[in-house]
Length: 333
Figure 1 (cartoon, rainbow, N blue to C red):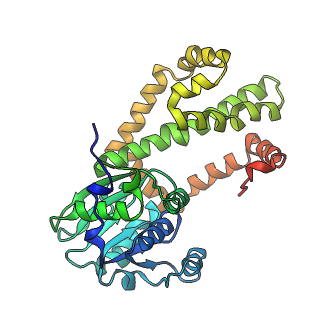
Figure 2 (spheres, helix red, strand yellow):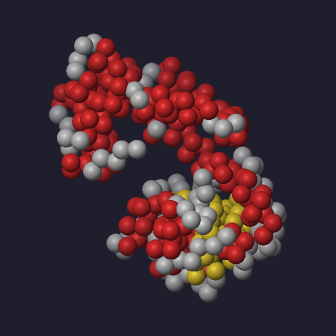
Figure 3 (cartoon, rainbow, N blue to C red):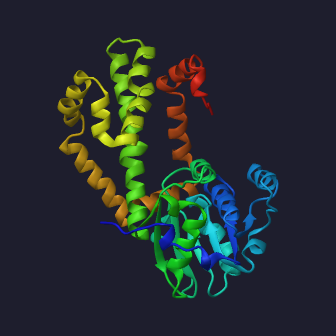
């Protein structure tokens, strides 16, 4: 069983009276900055001047500046930039300003695990990764709770890297719910696999395939949308609350029988074999190399695929139907 740390196991002392630099004021960056500040930690924010995130940091009472200024004298440096941008910014702005004994913190292990960032041996390298988006990390903290996190130590130069990481996790609210011990390897590979095979890639492909099957069979696109897209939230919310058992308890017997007998016909041994191939590509670094190359080449494939799905029939029907449902507060992009 995994080791789980709570507030009593993660004293905030190692960061008390110390400066923490947060590089990037996006989804995770704003949550970590605000929560740590509210926990009594001095926080310096680094963000590009004039951007929306820069203005948001100002609105929240910070005085955002450049990376060098934020890092100066910081005990912990939290990098919350997008994966694809981290390596370049690390080389040009973070590495030249790193001092021995500082701690580099990440919320995802991609660049460290695949060695696109290789810190010097005289700094700590740790991770605190909340299992939820930044807005939830912030709102749960404000309620007096927290979002579960995972903690990992890749490099311990000072002998107390784990204590610093746990203090960070406590300060941003994670220890209120529990912080699970892991490794950079485990976090990175499972995170990418989950995104590609289940949470994003698997789910969106399943929804599209179901919608297209019904429409091609002659059913109205609006009805197909409700059955294959809209009602996904109902089922996911039930599983989120109580797992598959609670979901099955909550739906009709007809739906449950269909679930138990037809689901295995969709997710077959062939599907599992493809999942194993995807996992192998992740573990070998093949996917990481592909993604980095795509980013460096201008993301032509990425943009073409995004545009294709943005304009597909499922999305066009959805934009129309969501206007009928004011309560969901549709967010169209």
